[in-house]
Image 1 (cartoon, rainbow, N blue to C red):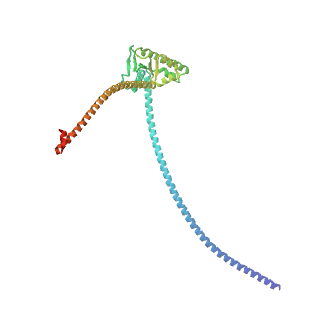
Image 2 (tube, rainbow, N blue to C red):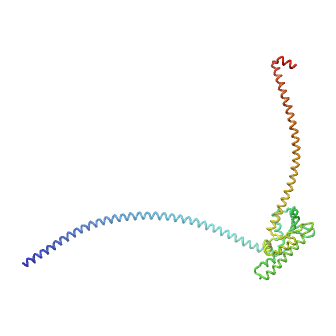
Length: 355
């Protein structure tokens, strides 16, 4: 019995194992089938995904190409613009460098002229000629060249002195002498910073002495009672010296005022002469205005005579006109009579009237 139970147990175990094996094989077949289907579906989906990715990538690549082309065009355009601007800037720089080079040449030439001018101004005689030439240019620029009725150059005075220029100004200003002075040496040393303060003070005193000496000479030589007015003009051809005197040396201005000498520079002299020119023109205008007024008065007298004669003629014309009208009326009547006679239609009453 026990052997039968064992055999039955073994059989049951074997049956269970067989069932398990069969079930496993069935499951494996189903799994294999499902895996196959899943693989097919995955392959299909992967293919579609690959196609979609390929399409998207191509579209993205195409868009990127277009954007790159547009960016390249814009970059080229900006590069062209920047190159054009750079070219213009470079051309402008070259032009400016050329102008700077020309200016440098002019500066070098001017430096040579300045050195030459300094050489000229170191000599007193040439410096005097320089001042006289400047004075001539100022006078000619205001009054014109060789205007002897207003000014003359190198004019001999009755006391034997020769003034650089004489100005025939209208009354009450009168005839004024203008003399050019150029106190340069001590002025240069006075403003030269290379000298010490004490040395410059020494040169300042010498400069003031030079200016006072010139003022005295002009006052004594070119103010002549009965020939000139009681004042004269000292012309300084250097604006710097004139500015120095007016800014820092009021004592020289006061001294010149006492000696009746007016200190001028090219600028102030031009202003003074321009005012005198305007006065002369106004006087000439007033003179011609009085002449015109006198002629208008004479014309008024002649016009009154013309009006009286015209009135008489007008009255005579009116009288003649009335006589002409009367004669015209009589002529009309005679003409009508002749017409009646020619038609032979005069009645007896008219004949009797005529008789």
